[in-house]
Image (cartoon, one colour):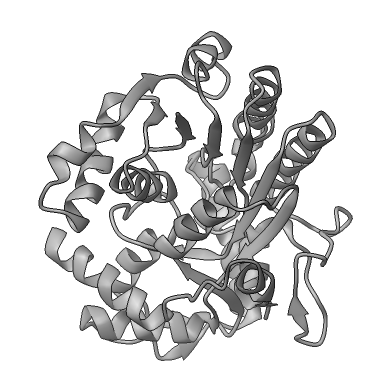
Length: 336
């Protein structure tokens, strides 16, 4: 039996589809029944028989900090995919981020150890990997520097990874994946690539020249499954298809959406002013932040990631990002 946390999110829903299609017996935890509807919608993208496939999931209501419910979820489980996380870049959410990402992961690790599960796959992020200088490729060995001005999401995902590595010292066999920006359909809000696609559709006039790694959502879940099947333990793997500038990403997205492409460069000076004005707006009006200092740093930084390790370990071939964007944008347009 396989347990999936975060099954109602982008990665988790696609993972559930791939596992069920393979004939696996799967449990998944959820917080509210409303969120389960999004999973069924994702299933409908890929199969006309989605109702039958979806009905094979055993759903258990639980949160990452609800130990009694998690203990029920862990019964008779041999493999765990831990995809659940809270994604926010707002400093106001720091305590919630710690509670869900760090403490919640510690709970999953502890239950994995006490239930003697065979293997855990943890979905981390490239946000927990350091940055190289002079445009050198970033690898799994590039260390994250806690002394740098890190964002709250990055800090808590790094803390979650520390809990996972602690679990390996207690006998829990683990693989960790560090995906780049994940491209995939079904979730158009919440700060992921879906919300970026929605922003481009509504109109985006400016771009930045920062560079980051992108990956199709199915090119995250399929390597995860491969890594769980192989005799690979206590290793981490960067999952990216291509490194693209934000300008290229926004331009490709606009083309596939048949909307105007961004034409003007958002300079560092303009972005510096923008995040300060956004802070003032948030402070005076008690509104959520839209742009953080660390976010402006990220979107102007050129970070080139290597996917050599996962290719060598699994011989996996990634989908070109332009193809992934074309498919995802078509799903977006159909749902309008």
